[in-house]
Image 1 (cartoon, rainbow, N blue to C red):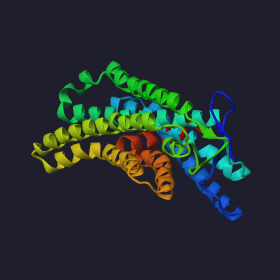
Image 2: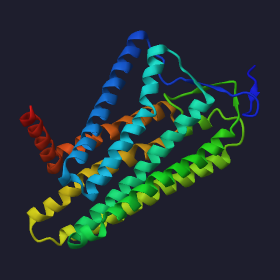
Image 3: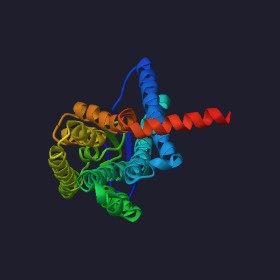
Length: 310
């Protein structure tokens, strides 16, 4: 019979049990995850490089996009390399400190993205509704004051969350039905009362989900109202298209998590988590590069400069 443990005695060991497949299945998972990881790294690094090298991209919009690309790289690096390691070695064991560290980083980076998307919505609102005062309102200091709290508040929220998870009791060996230490999944095998932690998670869903979503929705209601007042159909389309990339990412970001916390199926949880962890970071650079003339123009300029320098 398994012995009940507390953090004051001996630490539990977590066994990642999301993917239990044959040898060929593990090879396919490794290849797919590595491909996705390389796409995410290369795409987001390309955007960061273009923004840093091209002076015309040093605007508030691309400042936030650079933050978002940096965040996406850190976010996927929290989970995907460990998944590759598990599939490659067959070692599904994760220590208690490693599990909590992974949960902390996952919560920190995931929550930061929610705030950054809100800051980007505010930037688009000012650009569309107050175009003549845009450069004055969205100064460098204002951009920093919007971006820095996003990282800081998310880190504080993640720290509070981890402090409560640290006090949970588990058996000696804990089966985690996911490919990383997800907060919702860790509540299932906990032996002590998880009501305070569940309450905190629900509060964080409101703070990190409902409030940013409401601010983004209000921003775009004002944007749509302003766009509809433009007499030229070409002008309306051009103005609204500058926001289309951000709208796409917002829908992709908030959709899977809402579905994740509404379902009770472990199998659906794993699928939705995989989509959430990989889809948004992978599509971010594609959406912003394929639909953005400035990014494509900057890429052509950099390629031309490299060719002429050879």
